[in-house]
Length: 195
Image (tube, helix red, strand yellow):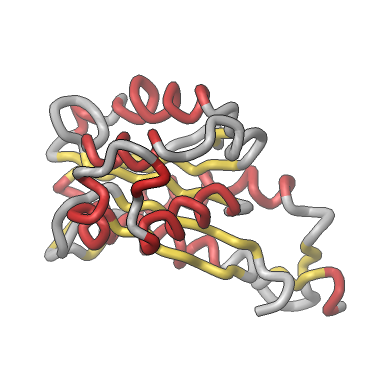
């Protein structure tokens, strides 16, 4: 889709199926109702084995290097991880260790996480936000956290969480207002060049 927003969604879960992946898919679904998207979904469950033993960027397998280049070239990044030991997964951090330190500067990033209970919800503020602060990314003000009770068989069912996703996405409307204009009578944004 020409003119679509290039979105890269990173799912830090090492398993499939995954509540974190279900959360990422719910965010992407809501975002697609607002803006035309070109989505690349990067799942650590798929690339983890090829990434795990690599210590230098020039030694990365081509498929993994391509994923990192996609992260660096994204116009919007969705970064999501399950909570492990009060933080994001080790491979999630290892992946971002290969991202150029200035590649995400001023890039909007939606932060998301999933965990067993609400007691892990602050992981977004205490772990994810500082990581993307290092990159000087524009982390959206509201992160999205989902606990086990928000799901039934990997389906996100909690209406309050769907509302939180909407509120988390709200700043993107202003961020991309110049590029995308609301089409008359539709809920999907249209690139200015197609008006």
